[in-house]
Each structure stands twice: as C-alpha cells, then as structure tokens.
Length: 353
Image (cartoon, rainbow, N blue to C red):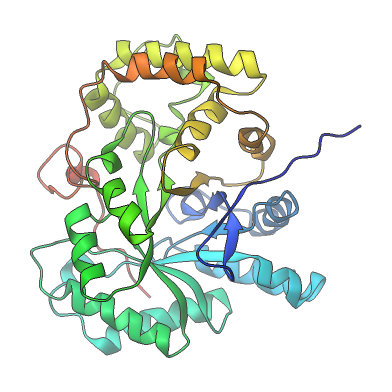
C-alpha cells in the first residue's frame, strides 16, 4: 500500500495556512541558466499535488514572479478558484541600494503594482520587506507605506527579510505588523538564535528559513570529499563555503556530515532531510524554503515529514555543534559589511523593470 504522507502546515492566523516546506524560486531566476518554462510550470503542479502549497519568490528574482503568475493562471483555469486559494505565494520587496534614502511612496506602490501584475493577482499573499543599508534614512517609513498598501487591499500579510533583531523590533514598535522574518538558518548558521528568536516569543513573529541545506553542502555528495577551492560552480557554493569556514572549517563540517549520515541511515532518509528536520524542530520556525529548479528532488525533500529526530539523534548533533566557532553576530550582519568576505559577493541593485 502506498505511504500516506502528511505535509505539516503553519499559519499566520486562522485564515492563512501554508505548508511548512516552501518551494524556493531563486534557482529559476535569470543568471542560473536557461529555464524550460513549460517544465517549470508542470513541476509546480507536482509540488502542489504533493502538499507543498507555498512558493517563495522576489521582485528581484528575474522572471520568477511572471513564471509563478503563469502557473497561477493555469491552476485556476484547470482546477478552479478553490485550488488557487490554497496556494500561497510569498514575494519580496527589495528596493535597490542606490535608491535607499530617496525612495518615495509612489516608488513603493509602483513596485508592488508590478508584482501584482506579474503574479496575476489582486492581492499579494505575503510581502517580505528588505532594506540593504541601515544607515540610509527611510526604512521604517517605507515599511509603513507597505502597511498602508495592505490596508488598501493590495497586500494580505507583511514580513521581513534578513533584518537584525534590533531593526525588527524597531519596525514592530513603530506599528509595522510583521508576521514573519525570512532568515538564513541551518545547522551551520545559527545566528537567528543570537537575538531574533528571543523576539519571536513575545511578538508572535515566526521564522521562514532559507539556506537550510547550505546550497547543497549538507548532503551525501560532500561526505568524505576533500575541501573544495575556487572556482566554485555557482555563487551559492561560494556563499555557503564561507559559512562552513566560520562554522569551524572543513574537518568539523565533515564530522557533522558523518553524524547526519548515521542518523539518516537509521531513519531511512537522506542526509538533507535530517538537516532540514533539525531546523523545522527549532522554536518559532514556521517553515523552510527549499530551492528547486524543477521537481527532481521533490520526494527527497518530502522525506522530512516521514520521520522524527530522537533524543539520541539530537544529542549526537549537539555534540558536534558544541565545537563550532561561528558564524557570530546577529542575522545577516556579516553580509551587510560590503567590504567583508560575505558582503563582497552580494549583488545590491537588481530591482529593474
């Protein structure tokens, strides 16, 4: 008899439910190679049919909002409005670095209207706000403009992306009704625990986590492999290799992979499922975003809902994590240093029409 699999759900209130596994859209963006649009849309149906009812994208992911918009149109046409209502699409509002400090209300509304048009909807489910430079004026004012647009019916919920605990608290104190914060969170990068999770309990803020498998480093592929060097196959590997260096280096990383592989073998799942399950089990985590170009690894992704970590598993993982040296600081602080190792690889001006 086929296995019955239940995909766990989270909620932003009683009328907003979504799968705890979210399909990430970054790998469908321009710059990641040619995309077969027909195959991509067909595979979106595969995710929805499997119970993955939440997609993540951004206004700066070239072509992705339009692609999801085309899928939404097909979904409604083939399965009706009820099926469309079950799908939640989380996008982002990411003004360019060069525009910060001078962004106007009409600029914000223009970008939101563009996302509405691309996604073929009258109201955006969740808009996740990002602000590159805390030294630039207008961060809270811009977030409040998004709230005005929510009151006008263009946005359902407002979240944030990559804000530190201090800046998150400042926005919420100013009246920005943040329901979520998208943040990098993994076995290798626990910076949300350096302040952000403390903010969640009293405010009800929930975390949507990316980087959970470190761009694929947290997989069997890298177990027992020698430490890689430049050039890397893509910018994602460059980014997460820096995190491994901060974590404690390649030797400690290999020890972590060995422990995860043992746990995975015991439960009959893949190593990445164990890494993802660990993050899902952390307090205040609503969901994890899994990057997916197509549905090739969907079954492996869904394995996270086929098992539970036992006390012995958690203890074995904790014994390795106790030896880590970083990364240190609040969320996204390293990446905000444009002259630092992490900040130098970022791209800051991508919000183009």
